[in-house]
Image 1 (cartoon, rainbow, N blue to C red):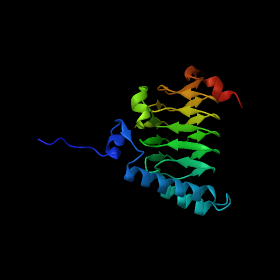
Image 2 (image 1 turned 60 degrees about the vertical axis):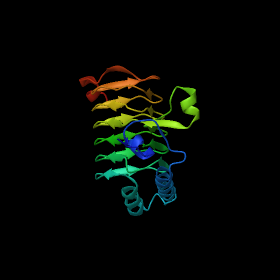
Image 3 (image 1 turned 90 degrees about the horizontal axis):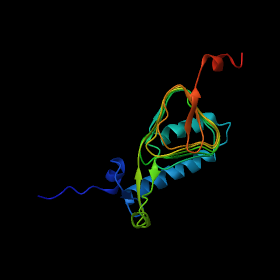
Image 4 (image 1 turned 30 degrees about the vertical axis):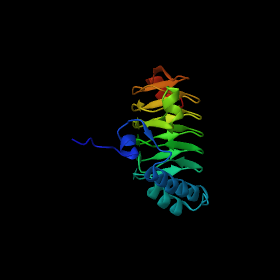
Amino acid sequence: MDKCVLTEKEKMQKGLLYNANYDEEILQERIICKDLCYELNNIRPSDIEKRNKLIRKILGKVKDGFFITSPFYCDCGYNIEIGENFYTNHNCVILDGAKVIFGDNVFIGPNCCFSTAGHPIDEKQRNEGLEYAFPIKVGNSVWFGANVTVLPGVTIGDNVVIGAGSVVNKDIPSNVIAVGSPCKVLREITQKDIEKYK
């Protein structure tokens, strides 16, 4: 009986080690996406209608009320889903070999990176160009401070604040402030936080 041979893209989608360096399908999809990002990043900021039309072409799923500040970069585009009232500041990078799903009311500070891509610890596998992609999921009402990095396979709950400069390598529960490298829960969000700026 013949064993089913997976393509590199199928391996990527299943969270298995894959090699994108010589796979024509993956390389072509990335080039198309990078050309679209280049085009987006060179549209005048005032031409909102043209920008939004192109963002809808790049991303896999888009709800209403979004604003993506250039420059913006991603690998595939079609693996990214954004909810309503989505905002990202300058220099957002999303390496979306796997799904990256954002809920509603997500705000992202400047210079943030969401990377589903990782490389093996084993030097032989890594030197062969193998990599993996694990999905990232972000809940509703999440705020990322500047220079946050979210690593492969992370899920972040609802109503979360991730402090500036954090490296998120593990899941973060709902209703908390989390900060650090590695990112850890600092405390729960309380009634005092709601009243703080009144």
